[in-house]
Image 1 (tube, one colour):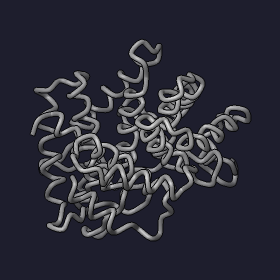
Image 2 (cartoon, rainbow, N blue to C red; image 1 turned 30 degrees about the horizontal axis):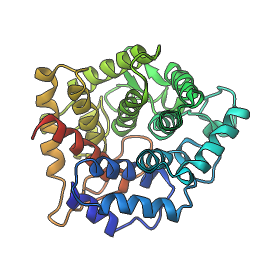
Image 3 (cartoon, rainbow, N blue to C red; image 1 turned 90 degrees about the vertical axis):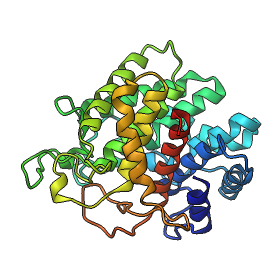
Image 4 (cartoon, rainbow, N blue to C red; image 1 turned 120 degrees about the horizontal axis):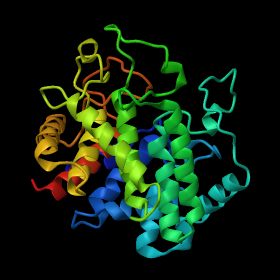
Length: 333
């Protein structure tokens, strides 16, 4: 984990801003590494990042992707209680609460120009709700958590397929089908959701009235996802048509490994059933790490299954790897 994180810190992706979601997912992984590494360099790197951003979120007020970095700000604040770390996020979220958007999630820029002002695509459930829930944790103000919970279920009601127990990426995917006739369920998109479920459950009080509903969805998705793992430990970019996308893919696999291992560690998933799944997944992920720490086989930015260069890497793939590694340590190497 340290080697992979060190490589990414030494090779920042110049095309992404420090506040962009691509990096924010990496920071979430670094914070998981902070919990287990004896070196202070990883926490120091995150504080330096926050200072460099003046603790601001991304520029788009409502866009979930521009909220994701706030998760790391909240985690850093938890240790220091430095109000600067959460001040801009608190101001942003208070503004959103004062001026909420409607619940039109149609993913069509012409018919619904403000569609990205809502959590209208499944990736958004990793990016924004945990930031709101973490802010509630560290401030003690339930209004942030309740917003996240309410809007999560708006998105779920729209994008969650209750038969398949998987999420469509957005409404534009509803009518599409894979070559084999199956519905299109993108691996990393569902990985974002499973990771988001983990982070929401971590932030919800044990007695929260919605907790049971989150646990139910987590278990439903986990069972379906585990059943779709390929023999080599990976999940392909298309969950229901892996033959059309035979390339090994580490970002979706990383998020699934993270979510399933966390579920075992928290007693929400049966260890005997799921442990072989996560151990195969972790072995697959390790095979994607080059000797210098570069993580490969990361599907580039997108919103559907695609083919791609096996040497591709991105910060969010590294974040998934680090999150998974933290849970594998808890599971017991």
